[in-house]
Image: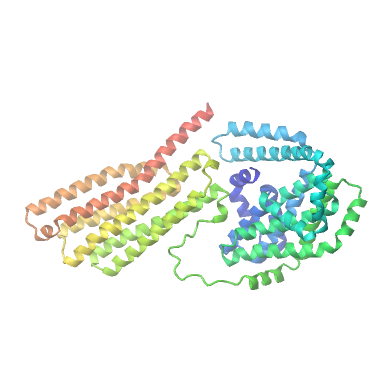
Length: 530
């Protein structure tokens, strides 16, 4: 809840912080620390870096520096959370609940409220774990179960790594280990081994999540894994000395666990920040560049897998991809007139190929949207979700009308060598220009969600209907006058105008959804003010 709340409230700002502070390793390090302190998740920061790297926004060196900062930041958060903050728990939860109810449609304030509730629940859960684990310290069976882990370091590392994988958070895993230590369930030696395993598991999570991403993204998670494994190997021989040093401080065992977690990541930072350029070279050798497919037309460009945890960013990416589909459909429609005018079969083939692109991108958008957590969306985002899905579907229908109907009509005209009358073709061209203009307006409405522009498009639908009726009337007048070209294209003319009207209906639907949403959100704001 903390991660989701802050990600949705400040996702763009956090991403901008990383993107604009990677000019050198020190700035990148502190950017990673700052962002992770807010997100409470080094994994989330790592995935942001991997996403930026895949888009060539940051290099491997800068990305690794950000991750080192993120690793150190999680240890500082753990240091804070191990203090007795139970008194703060009811304050955070109560404040969060009040804010959440007060700002149900308040956007950022609602997300901040969710983060406060999450932080309160974290403090509550830690106190419950301590209380529940206390009686286990007197168990006779548990030491027998845990004894093999202490004598088998590799097994202890694997168990802790698996625990971290299940929790999907190294921070949560380390806090749990510290709770076990404070209850006497595990001794210092086993606790430190489990912390090392938790750090390995924390690097494994983003590595697996980026396996299907490009080479640039995988280099960062591979580098993170290399750093963690190297530090574990460096520290294992000196574990006994470290335990002695921590014991000499006279602090409780749970604090020893957290201090060791901090020591591990500080050592990692001191070791690898100076060596980050050689490490990035090693990563480039281990994960070489792959040859990208020549044809990228069918591949989505803006559906960022790493943005799915932030619905605001995910919806923005889906909207951009939908706008890309709209541009392809607009080009198809413009090309259809060129094919009709010039009787060019090559343009016909291009339009058919473009429709394949539209179909594949539409499928990708639908599948991507199914992975966005609808329950986490606020009312306005839910409306945007429906808008994107509806507009992309309508664009796919327009593509089918162009490819399956208009192109068949154009191909038949070319095959039969029919000719429109001069007046008839002028009417078709004018009608085409009107629909093409409406396509451009619809795209602007979709991105801006401007109710005034939407109203303009809706009002224009009536003029399109009148123009269609006028064109049909003039066409029949030419038939009565016995114009030879009109008789040869008697059904062709009316069928083309019919398809243009159908296309315009799909275009106009985006305006209706914008107007409906503007009205509903206005009512919601009135309700909040009341």
